[in-house]
Image 1 (cartoon, rainbow, N blue to C red):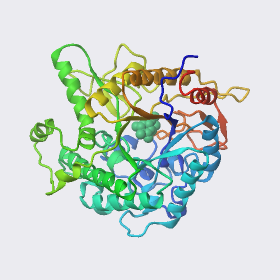
Image 2: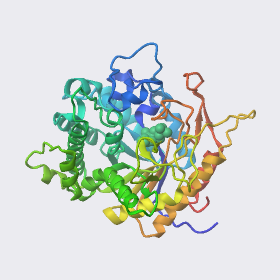
Image 3: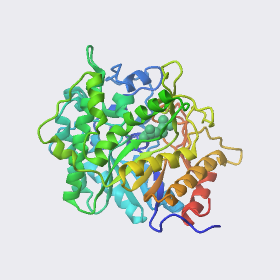
Image 4: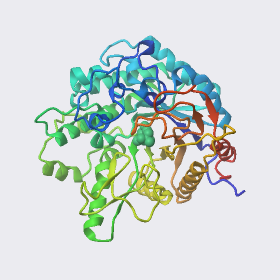
Length: 475
Ligand code: BGP
């Protein structure tokens, strides 16, 4: 075994999100949130894109997120399993509507605060550092119906109040914070990303970029507040990452890839550099809209993040002739199929070198420490006759990506840590099903909601434990 190239204080762990794991969607005074209303099945995509309203919950449809894996009641046992793997960091999110059920109250819901205090204290008890996302694809439904969600500048007030409440309530327990999960997903799935529902006659692009402006202002203010509450707080932005490759060396393809990268990096350019990027002027002019920007907004945006976090599942590919016909979905961000790489069962390209390329590009651009907070392979696992889950395909995927992250560290990039996505099986964000699994820990539950919810260690559990114990040397 070679010596570790990972720093001694490198954080190893896994990631989940409240709405994909907790279940208990109305327990403890929680209000309804956007994600609770996204149905399983044929309407799913249209709802996520903000094109169809499904505000009333239908009894004849199954919403897996309502029960999920019951992490809400089982977190102590689950955290113990993570501690057994040697986690030093655990990423989860706070469900905004557990703290503020409607979203615009002055006083928080005491039960919601108590739940997360206990959860974070449990992590600390096991010497696990919580890494907490304030908004992971969930907005209180009341704010969507009353205010139009992030269309409205009022959201800045509600979100900053929510964030301050969390910083104060969990001070001393949580140090690492993320403002918005995969903030760029707002452009690709506006309802999932930001609670946006389009009305007739909307200029959709205008609505999205106005909402983006509000989120960017809120994120900058929240970063400032976090530092005021406790100067030790570290706040990161979060990108659904993965560079675009040009489909060929044709200049039009190279330009297309650069533009597609800018579309996503636009958010991080603001959050990490503190101002709208130079290319945005032309972008807005050509799209034919003007943002409502208040005096003082430029000053607010100067509150940049402490680190840049991102998810990486796949690289992407673009050409000058890309259109709906020749593009396929690699996650929700459209991409051409890259003929040089293999893909997962869901068509997401598997490209470890793409991770090293993405990390180098981001560090060159931002010069801030990176944190890889989501990475993993969604796959259908089989439980064999002995009750074992031999997920060698997952181990292979993770090994190659951890190696690539190690290469990026050797390239000179400071990296804070790694949290593999869905460290315990949970509900998939794209499919809304259980059968697309990422975990080291298997959860007995199927797509129809059957199963005992029992937890079983997969083969990858033992492998990851060894990786952590050797600080990434024994892969
Ligand atoms: C990211 C989301 C996660 C997670 C992951 C895997 O986009 O931040 O919430 O779900 O993708 O995606 P999926 O669950 O669709 O396989």
